[in-house]
Amino acid sequence: MQRLIATLALLAAALGLGGCGYNTLQSADEQIKAGWAEVINQYQRRADLVPNLVNTVKGFAAQEQQVLLGVTNARARVGSIQATPELVNDPAAFQKFAAAQGELSSALSRLLVVSENYPQLKSDANFRDLQAQLEGTENRITVARNRYIKAVQEYNVVVRSFPSNLTAMMFGFKEKAQFTVENEKEISKAPKVDFAAPPAPAAKPAN
Image 1 (cartoon, one colour):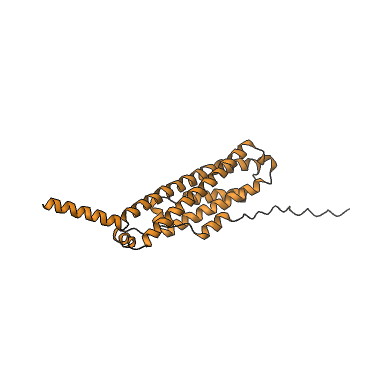
Image 2 (cartoon, helix red, strand yellow; image 1 turned 90 degrees about the horizontal axis):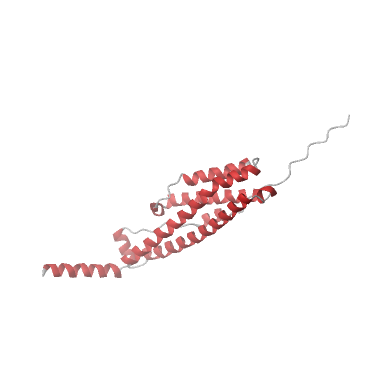
């Protein structure tokens, strides 16, 4: 009899948790983990392209040291941040990661703008292949980020909504970090590159 009562109590508790959003929270949390893993995967794909891209550009435009160094340093800052699954639970660390990725995006944009000034570089088969890979990766990053953003929005709504918010508080489900408008502005910022020709040397006075 006691075993039957315990079984019924467990069944009632399970039904209660399901009705209060526990299962929904679990499902939404798993969607975020999957979405975040894909975001990281695509960002890593981009980071892996950077060394070859920088070396190729350097072969044709070694004088663009500031731009080349900017890309290298931005990649190093991205690599210094451990993009663990727990990062989405730490808003400050998440925003630091997002800012670093935005900085790399801007640095790569400046690099591609500089390449327009070097016809031989633009015609190089290796550079064209790397550029195509980078563009494809940027598109995949956008898709992955959008999926993550949607997953976080749906999860955060459940965390804030009644009565699932009570379940969230009981089991420690908290709102997840999200990409912000500032991130989008940084990533989409148009690079400023000055291609103005240097001033002509002053004419020597006639003897």
